[in-house]
Image 1: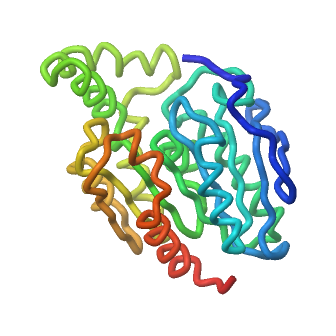
Image 2 (image 1 turned 90 degrees about the vertical axis):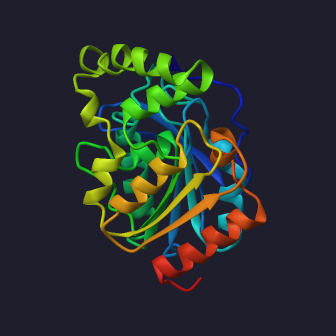
Length: 263
């Protein structure tokens, strides 16, 4: 799967600005930065899901900026206006997330930085070569536990569970010839055990791509301060796109407590 140079990303409006950053492996990653109430304000990095772009999280970024946070959104490689590249279920997208995190941390002069990772974005925040991002707080929203479950669930939700079980290994084990890693390497569930900051895990009761039991397993694996919120209605796409008052209330309260920085 490849992508890039999509036209669905609106130009930033001041005080926000668009920019390009470089990943560790040299790809150009499109980003939008919105300043906070000052150059030392706590910051939020928002990471979109597969097939999306920073446009998908633009409204929530604008809301967080209105609270005084500095915000940054990016287009992962193979998405939006970033360089065309193979999509790797979070493995190499983690390089994009780390480049953005480091840029934002420098820009805010070392202020606390939280990450909101949605589906692919949550995986990218966890499974990088250096482990989870060193965020002060982490929101994991509709995040798959491991690639084998993710593939089986997606096939099963479209065809049937038995067909998903049969086809899953044929697809999962393509990770080695394609990406140079075995499927076990693509496991946010394993990676989150290395993250000791505050975590908010969000899932959907009706999500068939990441079912409730898998969301709870991810939550159970979090070693640090943790909170879970299960949304009663909505499929995987709806959970990824949450922006309603209930969602914002939960996220706002979590960030205020976890980052412990007055705005």
